[in-house]
Amino acid sequence: MSTPDPDPPPGNDGRGQVQDEVQRGAVVNALGLAAKVTGPLFLLVVTRLYGAEVFGVFVSAAALVEIALALLTSGFRDAAVRYVARYAESDRARLYDALANTLGLSIGGAMLLAAATQVVAVPIVRALYDFGDVLAPAVQVMALALPLMAFERIVLAATQGLRIMKYEAFFGGALKSLILLVMAYALHLAMPTVQGLVIAWMLAQATSSFVALAIYGREFAWRPLGHAFRRFRLDRKLLSFAIPQNLNMTLNRFLTGVDVLMLGALGASAAAVGTYGAGAAVVREIRQVRLAFSSALAPQIARLYGQGEREALSRVYSTTARWTATLGIPLLLAVAVLHTDLLRVFYPDYEDAAAFMLWLLLIPYLSTGFGLAGNVVVMTGHSRLNLFNSVSSGIINVALNFVLIPRFGLVGAAAASALGSLVTTVLQLFEAHWIVGVSMQLGVIYRPHVAGLVGLGVVVGIALAVPLPSMPLGYRIGAALAGAVVYGLVLWALTGRPGPPEAV
Image (tube, rainbow, N blue to C red; front, side, top):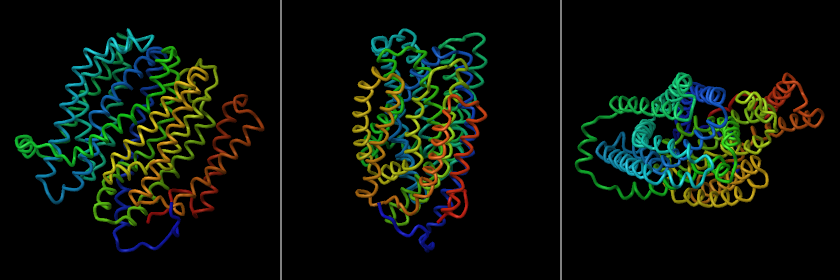
């Protein structure tokens, strides 16, 4: 990694304008993420009303369906962002050819997989899980929504290629979460079972897909898309990017949920899986900080790299990584102190230690601090590299799960996921620097990490003086605030102000 002067004067290469666009897009995405508060509320409603056992079955089924969706759409989704960003202002015919390829192939694959699931899901799931008799029907029903979900994901990605972030931010997450919340609450009275949750989930997918139809009609045109389908040709260049990225993101999605899936497959009860799933969901919400910025940054990466402006791209990438770390690290400190209390929000009677959540905190730290390297690798067209990263990480992750879960249970699953995430991050940083030629500049990004280390030291010092579990809740909240205040003061001393550091 290079370490240039962290604050060179802005030039005339448009970097300031690019950074402003990333900021505006991130603000829109952040507002959408704020609207996603219905997601944690849904989790709270489900765990309180339905219980850990029902939630364990539901979260296992949802993880399997999300892995299937990643296999079908993730590469085509990223291809839609890249090609729409590239051709929106210069070649409308190629834009619609790209949309025909991404929509046609992802929806067609989704229909085939949905049909295949009806045949193969039952025997496989029943063989793998002790609660397979309940899990298999849930997977079969939820798989029927795959074509609708594929259409929605590609349309929302295409609008991001136009540098319109509001649809993904507000409709892609908040609307679906709100419907899930309302329907799960309403159906609990009549169907306080896995079947009730599955119906609520299906209604959410259907509604958001109808919204995606309206969004497409507003931002794009149906007639040119029809012409593109009539003259349909496989775009080999698009496929050479999308297929490895599909496999890569499938592995990423698998790695995100492999701890949940393998806990169940290695003998953990549905209640234990539900407890772990709730804790993991709380921790992984912190990664939304990076997602708010990465969605806005992605089309800029494709455009700047296509124009050969690697130095400008390196600067924008590093500055954006500094922002995500600045916002993410104080959240990590707070969850580190209050992790058991947060889990008890969902399970008030939970009395065991929740140390597995501390291991999981490494994942959002790597994501918010360094995860944009993965976006640089993908959006510059190096999807095969990301596939290699995911395969390497996946092998390590699965092997560690087999070794650690039988011995350490929930903590073993969390440690395996954290170490797998570390492998992926190291590979992405190396590739972005040495292969793509876009460096994460240490002189730009170091400040929030140094401040976070000092804040962590304060929290650890308090915990050593008085063990956190023995403190009253008010004292634990005070310890979390102390860590955050020290973090802010150190960051202010390093930058001159405590907020996200200055734009380029």
